[in-house]
Image (cartoon, rainbow, N blue to C red):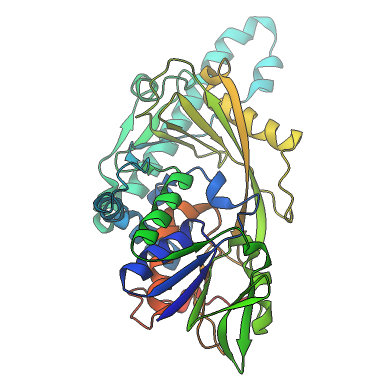
Length: 402
């Protein structure tokens, strides 16, 4: 079967890897546009801490996290042994509970006593928050044993794991959380797909257009030349809606800009530092080999396809990072990456065959959890395009829902 996949981010790359492994004749086309989400994404794999109340989303994310080790092992068998995936654990922090103005409004005689009382109240509040979070996460462990042990850490224990943390920061520790470099994983998937016979086309892909006739896809036109196919998977991230327009359908996906800062800590062994998830802000920190810490990220609705680094975005990321980990303040600002997350009408992926257009499958809309769910979404899309059971209930993920 001839299958064309448009988009070589994490989802499209995983689709090409799966489909070529199943024997399909695969062509992977990518425009290498600035702002691709995979190239900028942080790569946190820890869905169990999410407070999102959507069982379909959680089940998919949980399954995706569970299948990561098998994917990494399969790539290693293909010669792609180092894709940066590592199980490093995660620290879920309580809110800071800061009330600075209250202390400033006290007269001099009361300040010391009242400051001590405020600190005690804040510590109690944080302890209650963390215990509630620990219970909520631990309750999910029966259905997700891969999350590992869930435990409370005092400030000393937390700072031993992530030295730049602010003093006094207690945390819930989730042992099974992992991180991965999206660029390296996507590249490994593409290379493995090529070894399995996939054709990779990147240079001319800016002019790629879906071709349809009589309610069925016929292929993809690249610079005016039709590449024929029996099925097409649209995995073009935030650009997917424009690609599928010739089919006369509307996929409700739009770009959301995320600005992410990389900080160097000269001489620090950051290779096994855990992911840090401050529950009060939605921002995060994670570390990679090479003394590198990643701080993110903005979630800029209505950004369009603007991939600029902005002063406001940079300030938001750094202010949040330094409030949680002031020890990063003397690091080196290495770079800021900008990704356009593909977001749909809700938190669920836009995934599956398109009603009324034979041979067209959409795989996008993963939002901020693309590097968690992308490999599974790509594998599901490959199976759907090849007419095989997708092994996932695609009902909740209708790509044309609004």
